[in-house]
Image 1 (cartoon, rainbow, N blue to C red):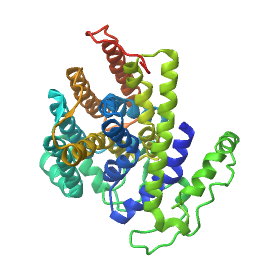
Image 2: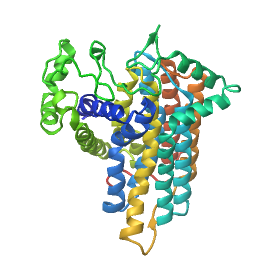
Image 3: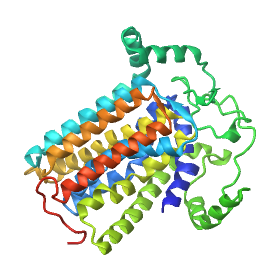
Length: 422
């Protein structure tokens, strides 16, 4: 399932995002915070609907809030440690997404503090996400305005202005030593592979045509290890080939929205199977449900975000990787708001939804501290993603996880433990 999700992301999900970004003229951070976050967070949306309408429990809240720290620290650690390039980050996209996430978390925690969800409370979550999308629509203008206003008193804004002035609005990436500079925020070509450098990328207005069609997914790789993985994944490749159009090929290029929706559906299905397997393993080994949720289940449900972020970080798209990490968490808050609003406003209008708000204080402190720590770590690291930042985030994630497990097991605090299946 890990291999299957990586194939879906690399061959179908990310190429469809490239074409969507070209058509809409999105910068890499806006694309990461919107379409990429929505597609890779499809499993959380399915989980939230299941929790509200099927199991009628708190599975959606526990899954989304429980995996939030992994999304911030764990995925950032993976991007730093598994990437061979150093990617520059911009101040404004990270500040924008962290602020939106903090507001979303505060709103959710305020709603469930009384263990009841009313229709107007869930509607406020949708309103917050709508405001977030509105900010993204005027992202470039807000970025320029803030850089002009705060550049005299903030060195990171000054550096960002200098880098933007140096960059030329050309497709592709400009290398400067070991550091890969980010693209101009008005550019679109954000997913170019190495093989695409020798080809003309299709422009936004369709003036240029791709000189050569993309090779078939059934083309065997030349490297030995890649050949072994290709043979092992051949059933998955065949299934995806028969059900999802490959928009990298000229014939299917205009079917990019179908590719996006189908790849999101496959990501959800594969993540469901993966989480199901992890849950059975936890029940067999007698691992407490809370510990499973904080560790293996958190990593399992966030697997699409991890794979997608690492893939784009390896290509030097630091802003897109970070915007996907934080933007996915903002979208996860919306995943709670949609089923809550549907049930309270249209299905069960007589009363609110009852939820369990135990452990609320610790959850609030953990989420807010993780946002603050990730922002400070990136600032102190010189606004770049490298192995040093990855190691720092990994240590912070282990500390948060150990403290959370001790809290859930009752060693810190006084909480009863539950075993999977009981």
